[in-house]
Image (cartoon, rainbow, N blue to C red):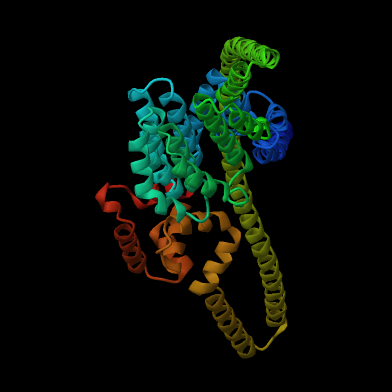
Length: 529
């Protein structure tokens, strides 16, 4: 009883623990859905409102691996884009590298490819070595895995971009013009066509080819309202082209034109890259200086110094933040490792408890099953004995009635004075006794009577040797009781030779001649086992 209660309590405790784990998993899944919404929201505002986008991303608990598992590639890619806008190069590289790592793990090959491409463009502008080209190869491989045809188009633009970065303007134009129609045909994303037009316009500006630069600048502006182009991308390139034109105007001493282009650029100041913003302040200061307006020139030089100081402070802060993040990440990794070890130990403990419970349950079940089998066997024997007892009682009553009847007949015979009549009455009584005796002691009736009185013997014998006939079973029973052949012959109304023949058949049937065992010894062993 105590064991059953303890087993039940253990099972209840384990079920409660499993329910707790499932509940915790459900809550975690619900939180993940909420945090996934933060990523989607940040993606909407990454270009139009970078501060709001960063707030969404910063609302995700750290380490992000536990909060947004499965969306880490998107998270780090968005971080990289925001750091690109703020000019935090160290954070930019770290974020894009993480985006590539998790993009590969999560099989988000589109993000992995785009992050690799951004790493290439940012690396190539600093150092033109195998490091940059490694990122370009990665981008090509990831876009191929994602079947991203547009991404592969952008990869193919990179030779023209590299020539553009290296001031090989004519070579860049040649590569761009050879594929310009192909870029234009990408209708679902006009970015590639716009990027090609941006580089063509800039190249022709630097080459001093004003007609072609104006031609492609006009085509570039025609894409302003194209719904497939992000406003940020268009505005940032437009600002760069206006600054580039302003620079050329200063070189040609056309200061009024320079100010006109700078005024046009100022409309998109919110979309300026850091390099463009620095060039913007410099051009304004130089233009006013050439025009003799020293006051305005100094104002813009002060703005330039403030901008550079702010940029330096941001870089220093970024360096400290990266250092702190590395230390924090290291601590988080240690904490996460310890947590995983605890969870693993807990899982092993639960598994061990379950195994022990299963073993105990199996052993208990087997023991109870054996007891039940014994009880059912005992119940069957008891039921059998009860039925036989009822039949035997009925037969005893019949025998008593028969004896009373014979006593009455014998009394009549003793009261009869006629000798001949007595003789006839005695003959009838003998005949009746012989007939009833013969009927009572027939094999079937004989076995039934004896079986009713000795049920256990016959049950055990049938289990041991089910192939025996009823007559052979009766002979076995009398042998078991140590009766002689002659006595058994009288009981069964058979000849002694017949009983000897039956005993011979029993020895052969039970294959006793193989080990030399006697029939009587076999019966005692078989029935008492």
